[in-house]
Length: 422
Image (cartoon, helix red, strand yellow):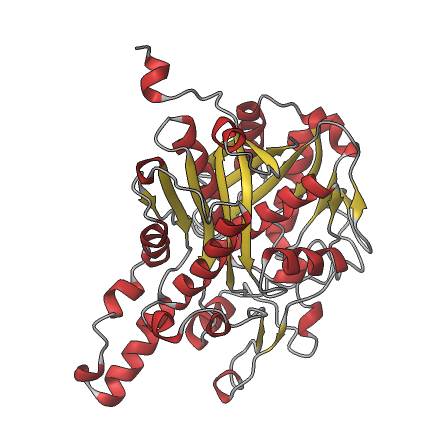
């Protein structure tokens, strides 16, 4: 038996066969995709007295509450992050046509990321304990607040035994889950991996804390226009919540069961800045550029193959410029043939789930050959100098194409994913 037989083959082709999502613009992947194509904002003013005195009184809350989808008894045992993940995972599983398929559980893995984890369980239980005492603390509290709560529950739901993982890399977490799932299949550890990201931390404390960092937009009077990547008037990101899950599997496994294939997960690049700031990106964009280059090399692609980039572009003054520089540096002379968009202009920033929902956006853009527009870009920053899709969806050319999805997080985490048409 050869080494490649034991450890797998890095050249193994990996494809996306299912997608699921619950986001600020839709309760499913199809409704989310339709809203993105239509340029619909999911950012809204927060209801309730708890938000009135906050410096930021709006966020991108989910379009469909998980309580409308999940059984009440089940939902009570899950943190909101796990509720979102379960909704998205079940949709993705069904979309992949796996509902009636008998998979070997030892060949099924999970990698579902989060940036913060069960913050709502922790914060709300502390409030309950202070008000009514320790006897009122639920025995489910620890399993609910663990960062791996979502991944573990999804793993139990689908009886995954090839490994259940929870990448935590701030706002790059969701993309890192895709990179990990890709490696699991390439290494021979699994045939199918449930990957994605989830986040639920719209609460007074995280909102106040991000606002104290001057990270959030303060357009309280026009929330739907607050997330405005690359615009001269941008003043910070918009907090979002939700989850996105993808089913990825080896091409041979998908082909053998006659699965529909949306796109190939062709490559991943993971780097770190190692710069002086924990929360600001390297202004040169060097780490981001290395991640994009690594993803292309891993995919066996060149800048000339790239037609589209779904940018991290959160609507922060420094981050948007650093990424624009990184994109131009990476793609060089091919940049004129690449259209760029930021779906965060509509969904807000889903933190640990961002890379996952944006991976779905890239996969569907390749599959349908249409790129969603960036909204709220009224006065482009002169330093950006990219072909940004605005107004209406942009068609992509026929033939083989490659698209990139960028995700960057506090701590200098950089993840770029390369997807290729089937």
